[in-house]
Length: 125
Image (cartoon, one colour):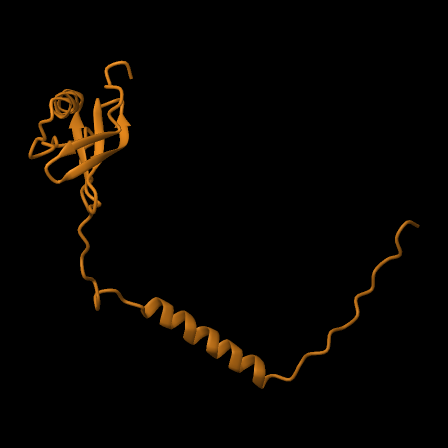
């Protein structure tokens, strides 16, 4: 944090007053946003110091000169999907469904069986 310039919440450029929105202490970048814009511009600490110096001398630079931010993480590769419509067989599910239907019909056609009471020996004696 000691390398970041103080009083750099706003800087003047030709497009307007850029507002500081965040500081990236790991990449030593300061992110600014121009009025009437949702674009965030990452600037190096040196560039911010230079713009602040120019602003104090009454000079307004044309551009912020944002840096290109690259990620150290490898880019994730999206998996490729294959169209398998019509290639998957549902016969095993159809067979299981037919068996279930046949079993249900058979149970409906049979009269209910009477169960014989089971004789159980008394407990404890």
